[in-house]
Length: 111
Length: 114
Image 1 (cartoon, rainbow over the protein chains, first blue to last red):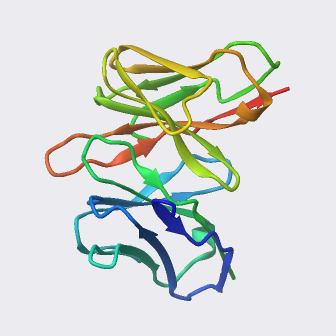
Image 2: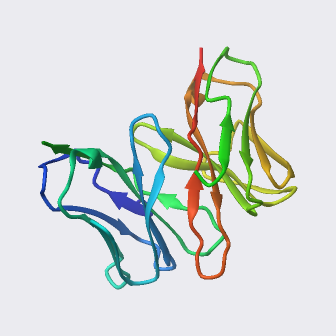
């Protein structure tokens, strides 16, 4: 079993839809969780950062962490064509250690 | 971009030649990482550094070496490039401020080994 599992998609939605992206993980020691957005031929861009459990909201984006289920989610409200990208989840157990990444989910939002 | 610059941005090299990629940061962060990104594999850790002259291996370190003689620079060397090392290479830094420890990436180096 991979440490971090993420459905690669692709996921296609119409503009304005609510998008749900998810990752599961196996290492119960993970406590730092991040979501990145990556446009084609660009570097990953940090979207959301969460420490331990709970929800975090930033504009149209909400990140949720459920450590009891080893499950994290990213919700995008009122999706826009500019949200079309690959979304990567990442996590680590300690502050200085390297992030372990999911393989990414490709999202396409059509206008 | 958290002050991260990768060079070169693109490179084509021949099998068997050594290649060095450079990552430069402007904010004196302690932790630096090299990842490669390949279709179907996602981002995989090659090597990382937790300070000057302090480095360690990651998941896919075979065929690669690193050096960090200054806080701001982290070099990745392919000792003898092979076609399997054709990839996009990303450098990352991780902040170590109180209560927050985010990671930021450079724009990547696209390496082709022919």
